[in-house]
Image (cartoon, rainbow, N blue to C red; front, side, top):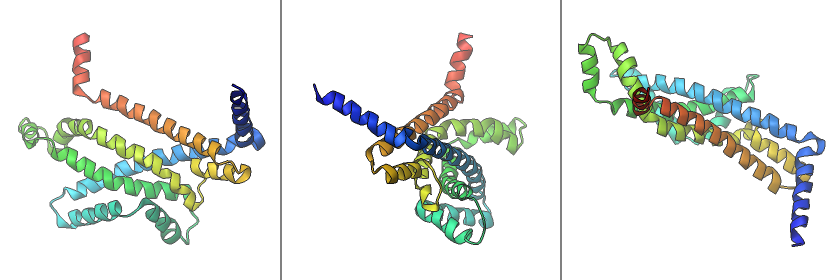
Length: 238
């Protein structure tokens, strides 16, 4: 029974030295903002880039198809850390560029390669008869894709997209290699000052979990909104 007060006192002391002393919570806060910023911007960039690469990959023209296939194979086969350091220390070595922007570019390029294949698999899973039916009803090819193929594709790819998105969020923990102060780097700084590895790492692990959980809830909400079954149920209830 006497051990419990001692344990609580130890936790309180660790919290004070790692978080409150010298306002170290500001390091965690700045790292949290950086992690969220990189994750969101890289996701947006990668999603748009993936759509472009998918369009090229599905083109019958070899001039478009071949570069897209090479891009996908190279980016999916290269470790993200190597890509990150290659862009920062080689591509932009002589350019004064923000490391955060480099991280967004690197993670977006990697994410785009996976998203392109997710898009392609989703589009090819739609029966071609639906496209032909849309064209026969007077829609153009673009209208057929936007109003018939795309909504079904989004609904089918969202579960896989969610997994890749959460993986991207967790992968941002390596940006400290290019001097970006994210959550993981913030915990390293605190650990180097307090020599206490447990509390900073546990706190960062909890924050990564919360980020992933909140983003997962947002994507699940989007998935429900795009599910035609859910819309039909609401229409029946109305």
